[in-house]
Length: 493
Image (cartoon, rainbow, N blue to C red; front, side):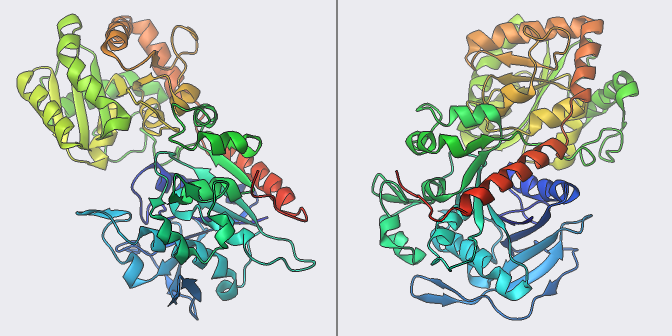
């Protein structure tokens, strides 16, 4: 089975978050499962820093509206693997510091850039002599690919390549003015309610949902949630219509890259057997690094996150003063984003210098040291498709405290429901009325050494590799290939 991943980002070459991490980690696991998998991604500025590469002979031939476009392909490998990565080289569309937006907001030509990615993926076999059985598109920027495949005239005796679309975050959909549909060169009939049209606008993700053979998302609970009005971001009707073809597959994580025993960024690496002494040493070093008084008798809570509405940390910032009044703990935060939230957390650190420390920005090493040095890790997300941070935290022995949503429900076993196998705590919601009793419970757990040790070990022992998800994706590819082998493709209801 030959599968081509089509994505705007792939870690470590180019990433903004979980999407890039998944596209960088899942292909090697699929390779081990016997899948011939490759990746195509734009050549963003800096993507090839330190990597060997070669330019493939010839040029791609694609048309964006009336414009002829001739990108080149540069081949490299995912670092540490033999998985080929084909990078779309086009200075006009992709030679930029950022992937989706610049200082002035979203790039105005994002629709064009999206179709360049999709059309390049389809033309790739002509240059590399390798034809996928399945095109695996990731998120809105590659979501038009299934429609592009479906629009190719059928050739007698030839099996159409199958398509799988993975939704990493339904909030991001690729919505543009309806005039942008003209650049797609797709049949005009595709721009309708059962296709790309969404309240009069071009919606790339909706078009992908309507056209893909199979649709996946990154956790079973999220697959259910996005079919509801509350979490559907306007696309619930399409997802309900395609429910039979929608599968939730929980993301894994790179257990070698996130291993506290081998993490060189930690001042005191530790393993399962040395977790208590290791975390104590890491906490002392973290307190010094963040200029927070070292008070080992108090539980230390941590958060590492982008600061914006989805993550729910605005509610936490508002609640911390009262939480500190009723509970004895310390708190550290690493994050950036919404200026209002940045200021709120900075003010808290200034107001409670003995209890709160805030680092505005992002530092991968510091993030890891927070996972290692904290006792509890906070994720009060309003919605969370899968979440990787809570999995990283558990791997480093920090117990997650998270809202009951999406992949957080699928990865965290709450103490009340699972007293013997618990690895964290789930909030009923992110209101202060739910936060306070949960913080109180966490402080009690910290005071009970036996219970704390049990939960830490449960967290660190949790199976989180990509092996099982890779097997589920391989099965989904087979289903998609059966779908694509049918005589005709029914796109609309």
